[in-house]
Length: 308
Image 1 (tube, rainbow, N blue to C red):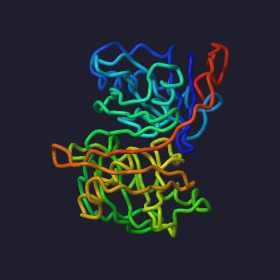
Image 2: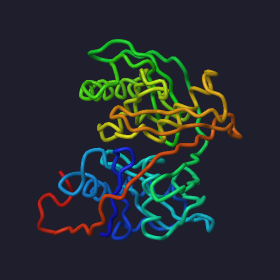
Image 3: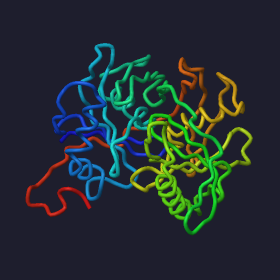
Image 4: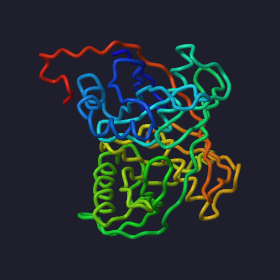
């Protein structure tokens, strides 16, 4: 299996160029469902140790259904198949450029939740124009076992988020374990309470927002992903959901740019325009760097062939 690894703001992406499962043809949403239903061992074998690493996201290249798209992709981590992935899309664009498949300029990428645009400025810098994102509910209070009440917003940016602002725990590196445990408990509480999307979609990510003393940075965040690891980047789909909430609250104007920082200090530049359906169309600018090109081997006698 031929793969290329990169990182976006410290968050790893593994692009699978060949050797993945045959998901058939048709809409990417259906192919993503097949991956989730029938190929969990494949996902874990790529993302988990000994081949993978914590927080890694996979980007399985597939044929797009639209001729105007440079690529089709299905994103996944060790815990779930993802609707979209912002950092992964930045990493994918840089990887495609590394392979000579795209050049600087604007390109379209088909994902399971819709077509997104990428603008490749140079070998490492990409702006993603995401799908329309929306704030679904504001100021919902839930009781979290072992912690107490927390209040947050439900928003969609390609995945489903519960966004807590301000964070009840300072968003600092020293608190990563504490924030992780709290995020897992919050996600469990939201799902137990039936809090999620308009059609009952469960929360898969939790965001804690915090202030920063750096005047050039709008805020810092900690993002819990479906595999119970934290996003080293500021999370592209999470930032999209966050923009929808800021717009709904009147705290950010269209085309006004802010800097969102992650818990480890990496950053994205964010802005939005108004969407056609009452939401916002986010723009996320970040940098990715290719870190490895490899051929993964799968020995039938390996007891850890499908990951640990």
